[in-house]
Image (cartoon, rainbow, N blue to C red; front, side, top):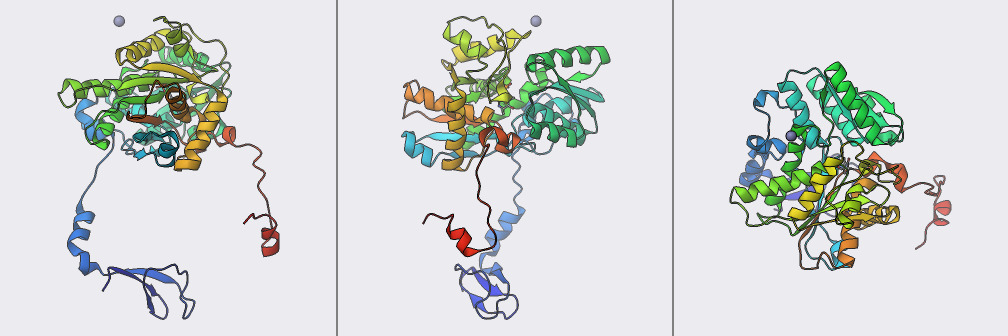
Length: 410
Ligand SMILES: *Cc1c(COP(=O)(O)O)cnc(C)c1O
Ligand SMILES: [Zn+2]
């Protein structure tokens, strides 16, 4: 007897696993029935195995000293997805997407925030604060809720509404600050000092949060069968994500597990690219950007008042023999659609810039076809659905086949 079949719940008629919706005989509901005994050992093994794949798998490499202080929603352990259609289209056989949209709040920020909030617990702090372009806000509110802490959140006025709502519903106390992200950064810093709150702003301001980003490197090492990719492309705001991933690979190298490090590509939006500007001018000094203008709001960070963050990223780019590149809003939108329509990966604009950067760098022959490439997809498309798809022009019909036919091209 085969391992599975369909059976009608009402008349008990049995079918093989074919395309059938309701029972042919009586219209009853169909259920998949298993011959459990035929595969008992394998099934039991599967049911008993406890896979734990989240950032705390690496707790010995994270700065939380007492495991009792760990605050977790099982962040990390995100899939590495091998390109299929985009691989064929670009000719890159080793093109991968690290899908960080699968984190609890829908963005990679859960890695640094889980560590930052755990540290707040460890320090016995009751109020935490962040400046954010949206994703860190949603993430901090989420982890503060889990930890039972109060969270204050400073965001630019133009923050996408989905992220604001996510932070609000999770209990964050939100205050909008006029101007760019850098103004929110300044207010969070002043407020943390004045009121003695723990500042978990995910620039390089909080040394613990950055450690959470390292875990992406460890995961990639496992997922690529202990091989180091030639290139990693990272959407870059202030840059802790670039720094953290590189630090993780540096540790693996130091521990003797790997014999090389990846080349890091920091990708920014043309409408706010202070790091790329410095890279292209050959300078190791970063000047703050003026007013950002890009749909990639998640990475629109002018670095005003903390230019040294960008300079640290530049150091990593150079040390890794990597690069920094800027992409236009049109290229970013193109990347959002390319990823979604070809691979089923739905990302927000700020998250798709890694793929937009890959396209540009491969077309310019900086990244070559034989090389292995990981694009980090940093946040989910639902975080900011409006910016990629306005005026969709979707038909509305009654429950009528003729009306439907007038809309369908066969
Ligand atoms: C915060 C963020 C980034 C940039 O991260 P940094 O570590 O500040 O460079 C990239 N993508 C998304 C979606 C983000 O939320
Ligand atoms: Zn110092």
